[in-house]
Length: 112
Length: 347
Image (spheres, rainbow over the protein chains, first blue to last red):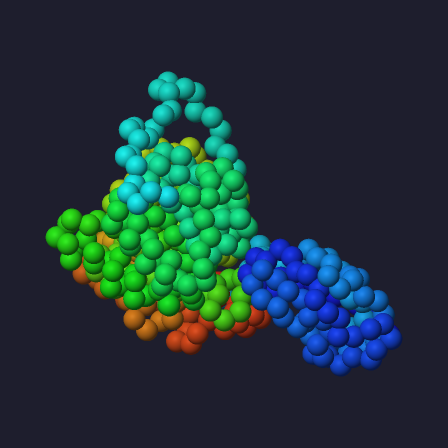
């Protein structure tokens, strides 16, 4: 079992915070992946956040009524299976990496 | 806000003659656009910036960060999530003498505003026989490369370049972003300004505001003699990568940043092809009826006798931009561009 702390994601486009309306799970509960964990409200709408992992709820990091910044810890889950990719908060999309691209094609220079 | 715009201020260039040129600031493209917007707001009280989240939040990509604080809620403001309304507002403001710079938050959200863009912004000047110019600069974060979800990565340039009355440009670097935006805002015609999201984080020197090359001019960003790569937006960076790889093989590629997608610099293209005799045009948008076809047509019209090989196109595929991890397979890769270069070299 590995602990995963799930951070409050950006729930819209550039939203910076959300407040916890109601927890739908409690510490010790068993949750399935995609099971609703918590209802939060943003400047745009109220939404249910699904669990990114299957496992056991270890800790809730915010009380009902509290306002959380995007990126703040929301809930820690003891994952039942292998680790999922960590879901980080952020903008819509990802900053592109600037690694030089790998090539396979070689050119033959034209005759002078 | 009053209903009619205040009079323009006088001269915009307040720099003292003879001042020693300072080293240009190094900014990200986001910061360069932010600076251009601030300069546009400062130089003309008729300029207005508005859109979804551009005010209090400062923009999803931080492009309008701090502008509302600096220029006030009457000049930099948030709108409802209604793109047709955002552009419609720009039409009414422009008719009353303002110079609107609306933002459509993502390229995919330009589609709900197409009616206002095509039916109103593009043809109001024409319809009114010149009585109602539309000095509107429509900023659209555009193109792919950030593995965004659906509707957050689209190439609109061929669509808007096809509409009579619109000018279209796309910067490739922080310096270009700054200069092209100021030029767009100062133009009395509507300009669709397509910001390459994938290059927002690129840092580069941004010279101070100054004389800019005329609307509709391209720029040779790397000289070469064996073939010309033509691109715009983020694909200029890709073509520069390809040119560096080709140089390892002894092939010297010229890279032309088109900058303006309407009007297209046909003379500049012809001049480059006269030097290199071969051209490859690279864009992210799907192949069919993309702007690459227009570039190829212009090159063969203007430089047919210079050409040693048919113009090649390296583009996205005729599918929507794939979301997430498949996107790099869709965008032109260095190998796909290199293969096209090999085809024009060996024709």
